Amino acid sequence: MTLKNILVHLDQSDRCWERLRLAIDLAQKHGARLVGLFAQTSRAETVGVVAVWPPESYREAAAASKAVFEKAAADIADAEWRDANRGSAQEVIHAVIEAAHHVDLVVMGQDAGGEHGVAPTGMAEQVILNAGRPVLVLPYVGKFETVGARPLIAWNHSREAARALNDALPLIANTEHAVIASFVRHPDVERAAARDCVAHLACHGVEASVETMTPDGVGVMDMLLNRAADLGADLLVMGAHGQIGFPYLHRGAGSRHILAHMTLPVLMSH
Image 1 (cartoon, rainbow, N blue to C red):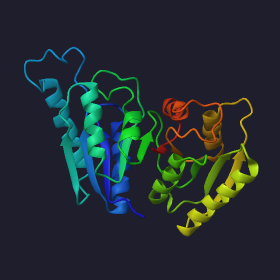
Image 2 (tube, rainbow, N blue to C red; image 1 turned 180 degrees about the horizontal axis):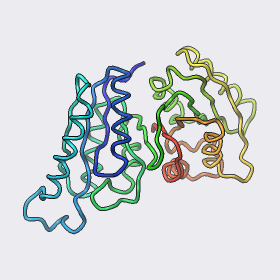
Image 3 (tube, rainbow, N blue to C red; image 1 turned 30 degrees about the vertical axis):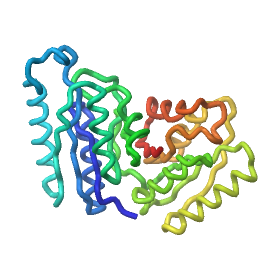
């Protein structure tokens, strides 16, 4: 499996360059087309009161984004910059979701508080839930030279987890070793399912091992993040909003917690 069409979200945030750099690396590695979508809200004081859309501040930001993208992606044979040209938060989110429908992978940044002039708060979660495509989310701090060399895969029997595992295959094809974290409710069933995951990954040339984990007062998602840190993982793979097998979590609580507290790149599928 390969990636042949990648979308990266662009805006004026400080972290935009880091995710653009990663998206370019992935496009070059996979020989993929790269689409850079500039999508951000206009400043709060201008939304709904401008006489002409887009306002000058938005046009300047878009022009700057295009210049940076075209220079950075100059060595990619098929690279395209686009302007979503939307104003409100809802319109911006919808534009990214629409664009995501037609690619293999979406690269986005973690919400950084919804500052004026950048992405709407909650956009990453909305794209994950509605795009129908895997979304690779980068934390708003840290530099990541590799993504997928040392993956940690969360497994909980859900449809979302199964899809995430398969969606991750292009990113983990050359992994050193993958670890599958399976949370135990019924040990025999969990171990059997985890063995099937190992066999499936082996069919794609990925070596993996299984760790069964039992929540003991520490939140399940915090256990995942702690284990990722212990392993030196450079990618967490998980289904979004799949609560089956994750006890004591309301639907969606786990993925929201990860999106709020992530310390490494996360691939989520829904």
